[in-house]
Image (cartoon, rainbow, N blue to C red; front, side, top):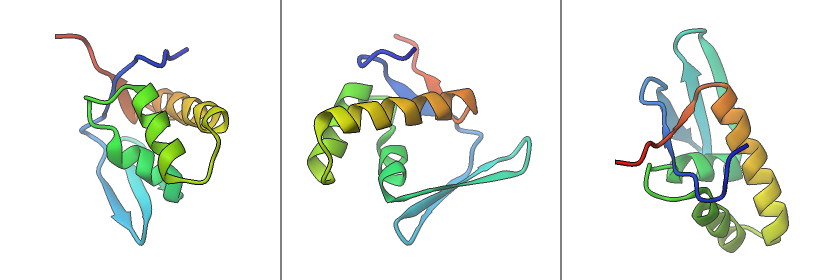
Amino acid sequence: MLSLDTIMTKNTKVPWRIIEGEAVLVKVDSGEVIHLNEVAAEIWRIIDGKKSISEIIDHIHNHFEVGREQAKKDTLEFFQSLSEKNLIIEKVSE
């Protein structure tokens, strides 16, 4: 399970684009195309290897009409899904 202090980075082998507010990701190894809605696309956009999951939850809570607890639950589930698909990688401390 990911902790709120965890910092994630995008897998650089996954090409992606924002199109009309939604993100499109391509898993090159399988050819799978993944479409992310507006909120998920915003999370994807700000995964930068610097922000903790907690900071991203705060961003979602402040920019969308969603309570903090709901933002936390949904964001953690989304991060878990991205991690299981190898779309994001936990940043190792330097």
